[in-house]
Amino acid sequence: MKPDWVKIKAFTSSEFDTIKNTLNQNNLKTVCHSASCPNIFECWNLKTATFLILGDTCTRNCLFCGVKKGNPNGLTDAEEKTRLISAIKSLNLKYVVLTSVDRDDLKDYGASHFSDCIKEIKKIKSIKVEALIPDFNSNESLLKKIASNNPDVVAHNIETVERLSSIRDKRASYIRSLKVLDIIKKINSSILTKSSLLLGLGETEEEVIESMKDLRKNSVDILVLGQYLKPNKKCIDVKEYITPKKFKYYKNIALRLGFQQVLASPFARSSYKAGEIMANLNSTSILDKNNRKL
Image (cartoon, rainbow, N blue to C red; front, top):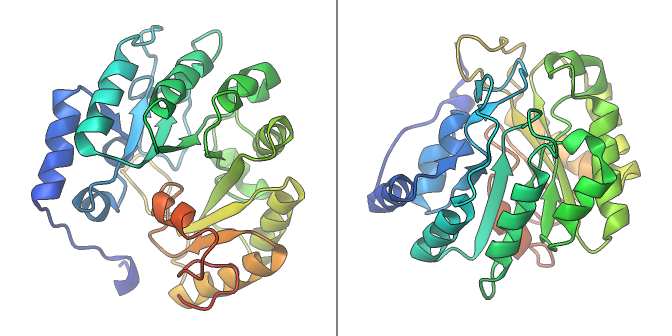
């Protein structure tokens, strides 16, 4: 049985319907829907969503992820960026989170298309872009494509502690993910970097803290810690439900380690409250480094 703190109530509103209709009209996907994110009702009711580009079929088979796996058609949708801009303008978004499936079937792993989408979004006045990227095989020239269009945040998730990295696809690795974050920061130090871990997969407290230290060694600015919740029957089981008190404990440690912002709660996900984190980065917010509010 799930404890009360990981139970969520589904509810919709006119804003939820607006997001859903806009996505359908523009033939766009979101990771909210494709990955069975528990926050979809909260986020869509607040008229925020994380756009999923490069299709909805991932070439990798991570055991915790609810996104569809398989062999994509090998093509990129050249018109996707046009429909993306249409949706962003229609929804009057000021902060956009863009992510993608892994596309190991493409020569550049989809980096050019991802970069082009960022470039088009950045043409909209007063808009901020967070790019939640795959590892692009840690290829520096491909990561430069992403960084060259000056996203405000580049996120890449290490997902879990090093010992448990076998739950990720064999083409991914803990060290490679750290390398990706390090390369982005070295290419452009003004870009904020971000990473997240899912907890409750069997990790120890010491391993979580060590992962935080590894991220800080690679100059990661923002950390997200959330509870792993099994998205479908094919995924691995939850080993433990982390209490809200424990999340608060981890958050305090992370702030002491030097992360600029930390979001730690059972329902936290990489792009959850992303715009709020940015808006509050330099203020005394519910997420600030002095932890004056929770």
